[in-house]
Amino acid sequence: MSDMRLIVAGAGGRMGRALTRAIAESKGAVLAGALEAPGSDLLGKDAGVLAGLPANGITLSADLWAMSKDADGILDFTVPAATIANVAIAAQRGLVHVIGTTGLSASDNAVIKSVTNRAVVVQSGNMSLGVNLLAAVVKRVAKALDQSFDIEIVETHHRMKVDAPSGTALMLGQAAASGRGIPLDEHAARGRDGITGARRPGDIGFASLRGGTVAGDHSVSFLGQFERLTLSHHAEDRMLFAHGALKAALWAHGKAPGHYSMADVLGLSDI
Image 1 (cartoon, one colour):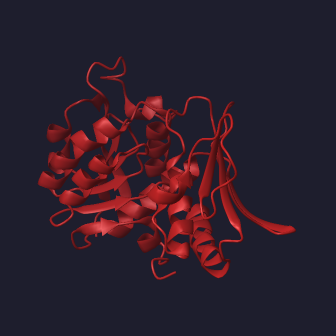
Image 2: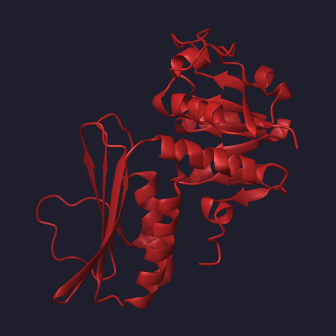
């Protein structure tokens, strides 16, 4: 099979530049387009140069329809509005759509899932191997421990991150909720301030820290009587997410239409 031709959405951003580097460093894929928001000062810039590489002749453009004519997939770590705008075009063009965008609403996710009867979408709050293994372990531990163990999730990210809790924290919360057999949206405690009263039994708590240049730290604690278990993952460089997204795209190339996750990519969906 020839190299997979990939578009990087948000190519001027930090993750976009990391994705461009990941494609350049890997076999089996080539950069076919670099998408950036209309009005961006970076439009027309060379994607390779922006990523700290030699010029590659792929300039940033806001026209996804034109650049997707000769592409096989799109790697999309942008913002909800941009991702939703990309969904219809990616589906119409038959592109594999790898979505790492966080902060998506329930209605956004409904739009994404609406195209998966005719398009291939791989969506995850985190594209790293370690985090997805952590989610699988969290689900097992939550299932094994009863509600006498409280579950608390703490995440730390760089000062520029705009959404909280992180997509990864919510993914871990969903894993814990699935293990317990409860709906996360009815048991998530996402903010505590002032006189909150005692902790509600069965809640899954979230706390978000922001500062510095932290790529991503996540921990899930199970706190029982006289003991606690903490499972954690520390991301040292966002390149790990870029390589995970590239792995997802290559895995999805040629797959039947559907909505997939990194658990599917890594063979963890049965855990």
